[in-house]
Image 1 (tube, one colour):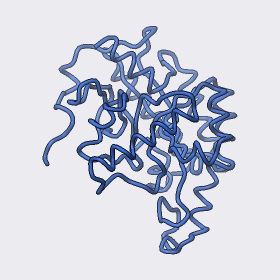
Image 2 (cartoon, one colour):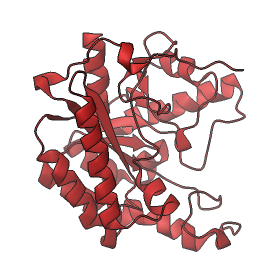
Image 3 (spheres, helix red, strand yellow):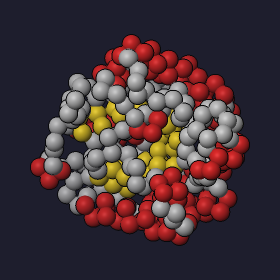
Image 4 (spheres, one colour):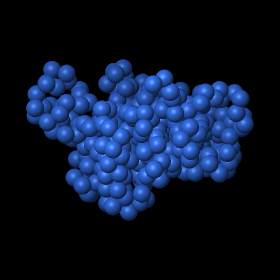
Length: 285
């Protein structure tokens, strides 16, 4: 099925996009708050034990996120006045209620991010996926008190029917198609794509490319500076994708703070959430 849920649209042919307050770059943090099944392989730091069940080495490394890393991140976000756009596995709502409590206190934006990060939709029938997505969205709404407006699939995965099924559930945008610096409409009526990044992402940068902390800061600054230059005539979106079990390890955390301070203290930046970006785009397009 050589069919994408969007049409080709070169950015140079679009009308100018203007952000609130005359900002040039809309910046949001995509914070992945996830649960991994203990008896299945997933994102790993050491391949030599991924065939084991359980796999204490890799599972324990991932489990650092909800136990310790997220709380280190929260202190930084509180200090800098940043609100998280949380990519939430629905299993987190049931297993780590303390995180949900902290997020509700801070009015975080909640996006549906599947049931857990060990379960993908690939191979599901339409009815299986409809039931799966309904359970995910309803569970998040029940525990957070807010129905999610956005979606990002575990490992950015979808089926060909996912956009339609998400629209049926009332969701308004997805992050899975990381092919633009601006929001744009999908072919499913009422559904948008909002920019996210597989490259400006701590897993890819630290695990895939083995970057050091100072190199991470340089990459974030370079990304921002280029988008800021590009936005002279039309606004851009910058998403920074974070996983607390990666970026909030003690030896990396200070570099996240350095990178965020550069953006927060820069003129012409709208510090916002993915929900607000989608809402504003709808209002002006």
